[in-house]
Amino acid sequence: MSTFKTPGVYIVELNVSPAPVVAAPTSVPVFIGYTPRAVDALGRDCTNRAMRIASYAEFAAMYLPENTTDFSTHYAVLPKSEVKGNAPVLKLGGQAFVVTPDPDTVYYTVNSVKMFFLNGGGPAYVISLGNYGPASGQFQKTFDDPIINKNVHSEAYLKAMALLEKEYEPAVCVMPDAVLSDSDGYAQVINAALTMAQDTGRYFCLFDIRCPVPPVQDNYQEAITQFRAAIAPQSDRNARSYGASYFPWLNSTLYQDDVPDYRNIGDGELTSLAELLAPELQENPALAAFLQQTAIATTLAPKEIHQKLLSMSTGYSAIIAAVRQQAFLVPTTGAIAGVYATVDQNRAVWNAPANVALQGVSSLPLAISDTQQADLLDMHHQGIAVNAIRSFPSLGLLVWGARTLASNDNDWRYIHTRRTLIMLEQSIKAIAMQYVFEPNDANTWTAVNASVSNFLTGIWQQGGLFGQGPQDAFQVKIGLGSTMTEDDLLNGNMCILIEVALIRPAEFLVITIQQQMAAG
Image 1 (cartoon, rainbow, N blue to C red):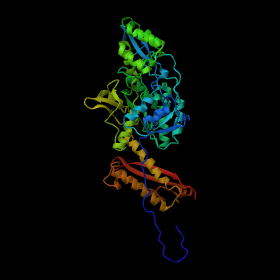
Image 2: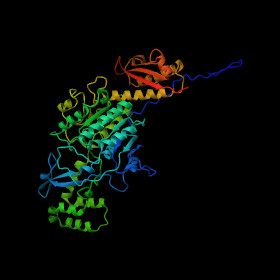
Image 3: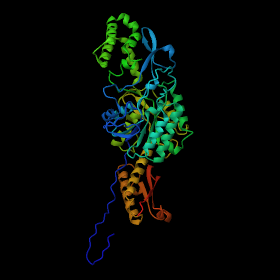
Image 4: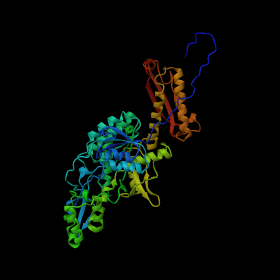
C-alpha cells in the first residue's frame, strides 16, 4: 500500500475482481510414434521434439515425404500352406494364397492422426521417435500372434515421456505404434505412461489392445488377458485411473482406390507381379503384353499403371482387395482421441465420451455381444476394464463404454470423472500461479479463494458439479490454521484445499494444491 506523507484527500483504486481464469485444455492429444520423416517448416530435424499441429495438412508437411505415397507397408502373397492362423484366404488360379505383411514395415501413427482429425480433432502435438526403419524382407508366417516390428523400441517411448513433463497444453497421450513392441516392451510403455500421467497430473492415456491382426473370435480373449496381465502387477489403482483402453480395432476408410498399389507387393517390381499372375497371363495376352512392356520402359506414372492393372486383371484386383482389407485395419486410439475432442467441444469434459458414432470407419473386424462386453468390463479383473466399440442396426458404429482401467474404484470408475478432475486441478494451479509474487498473507488468501470460487461457480453453472447451489457443489479452504501452519508460512508454502461434488451430490473429491511462493 502507498505511504501518504502529506495531508490531503487520496483516491486509491482497488482491484476487487477475481483474476480471470481460462479452463485448462482437456482434449489436445500428443501422438508419440514413428513417422516417415520429421522436418519442420525451416528444414530442421524435429525428431524427439513435441511439435504442435493444427491440421492433417500441417502434419503431412512435416512428417510425410513429398510426392510419395504415405503408405509404407509391404506385403507378400504366400501359399496358404506356409501361413498359420486365421488369415483371410485369397484365390488365384484355383489355388489358396494369403496376403501377409513384412512386420518391420507396419506402422500406425500416420493413420491414427488421420482418424483423429476425421473424428473431430483439433490442435494436437506430435513427438516423432524417428523415421521408419529398414524392411526385414521376411513376412508374417502366423496370424495367431500380434505383429512385432523390430524397429519399434520401448526405450524410445520412455525418453519421449520425459519430454511431456515440460509440456502443459497436451492432455491426452496416444501411442499407437507401441502395440508393435513385444509383450514385455508394451507392458513397460503402458506402466511408464500411467506413472507419468499420475506424477504430472496432466495427462489421460489411451491404450490399444495388442492383438493378432486381424483379431477374430477365436483369439481376441487371449489378447485381453495379456493386456490385463501387463498392467496388474506393476501399477496401483490410482495410476490406472489415468488410462483407458478400447476394442476391437477398426476397419477404416482412410485411403482412395490408388493406395496401396503394386509397389507395396513383394519387392514392388512388375516382373515379380507377372510371376504371381502367371496363370492369368496365359489366358490374357493383353495383360501379359502390358506387364512386359511396362516393366522394360514406360512413361506412365505408378498410379496410372495401378489403375490400368485394376481394369485389366481380376487377379491383381483380388490381391489389392486383400491388401486393403489388412492395410485399412487401424488401432482405436486415434479415433477415440478425436471423439474426446468432439465431446469436450460440444458437451464439455464432464460428459461421458460414449454413445458417439465413429467417422471414417466402415466396419469392425469382429462383433462384440452383450455377454462379451460384460466380460470386457468385468471388475473381477482388478477393475481393468476394456471399453467396447459396437455396431448397432440403424445407429452405426458407436463407442459403447466410458470406464477407466480402475473401474473397481467407485471414485475413478469413469473416464469423464478423472479427466474433469485433471482439468479442475490444472486450472486451479494456473489461478494460484497468478499470485506467486504476492505476499503469503490473508489478503492474498482472500483473493485466491475468490478466484477459485468464481471459477468453480462457473463450472457448477454449466452443469459440471452437483448441488442445488455453489455452496453444495464445492468448498474452498485456504489460510493459517485451516490449510497452513506457521512452518508453511516460514517456508513460503501456500496451501489450498478444494472439495468438489463431481460424482454425486454431497460426496466430495478432494484437490490439494501447494505452491511455493516467490521470495520477497
